[in-house]
Amino acid sequence: MSRYVLKEFIEASKLMDLSDKETYVTVGVVNEAEQREVLLGVTNKLYEKIEAKVTDVDFGTIPQSRGDFLKIDNIDMVTEAVTDMKKIYQEYKQPLTYINTITDAINNIVELKNEFQRCFASNTSLGIVLYNSTAMAVISGVSLLIASTIDFIVDPKTKSIEVSVDRVAVSRSKELVQLQTLAEFNNLCKGNKLKKVLNDLIKVSTKNLAGTSVLAVIGVSIGLIFTIVPILRELIYYFYYCRASVAEYFDTQVSMLSLNAARLETAGDPKTANEQRKYVDRFRKISDFLAVDAKEASNKTDDNVRQDEKEKYKVDDVTESLPDSAASSLF
Image (cartoon, rainbow, N blue to C red; front, side, top):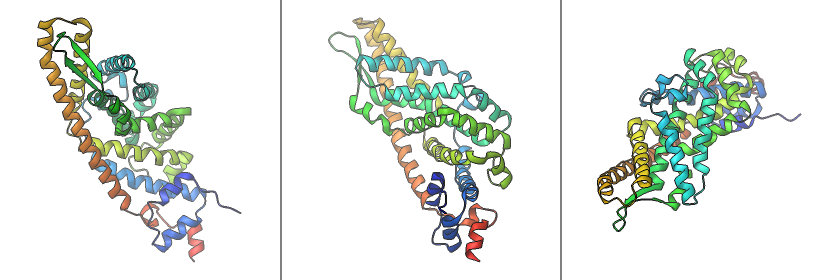
């Protein structure tokens, strides 16, 4: 009779120390229930690394919204910036793929308002970190799309403010950590998968995911939780290494909104154009800072993740006792 192997367990097995005999045997023989137990242990180990850094991440006022995305300070500015950016992209016939990723993420976070609020009320750590980091990914993702793909100039002949879109940068936007993780977040939201996971987590309301009692409640959700944690790791590591603050992300959006409004309202006015030139310079300065900061943070994140993946776990690192299937095979 062939053994059923969870696809998430196959991924988790890559993090196991197969040079250790007990671990090697365990990976090869454990049944489905025991696979979930091992998955839970590996997930907890990965989440411990996130918790070691998350306390040093500045989420601005996002945590104060306690799961209600629309109550985040200045969030109306984010949605307005997305609307303006979409119009500019359409004007220059650029694909809306990455803007749509952000829009979908906003809708999904809003849709999960009840679950996220309950995570805050029950102090469900993973749910709280997921909310804070995805909200931050939306805010910073909008600003980085602006910074990397949009520019403003004052035309020396017409004295009007003009906008340009870097087509190459648009195509490279897929490399942004925020857009990659938000796309994965959106996928997890399909079919209410993430909603079920959050409800299961709220039932156990614990920082530590280990233990058979936790597994009994979470059940099949552990596979999705194992999928969520690496997404969180990417975001938390990235924000840990970022120098940019939430205020600076908002500053980029304010600058774009102001310049775009001036472009549309004051075309050909030399006096206004001269006044706006300093705002163009400020916009570029902020944009350049965010672009450099994002690159450095991404590189450090990649290095940290690679270092994590070199660490391998023995079975006794991730389970309270040797699974029965492995024990019967060894003894």
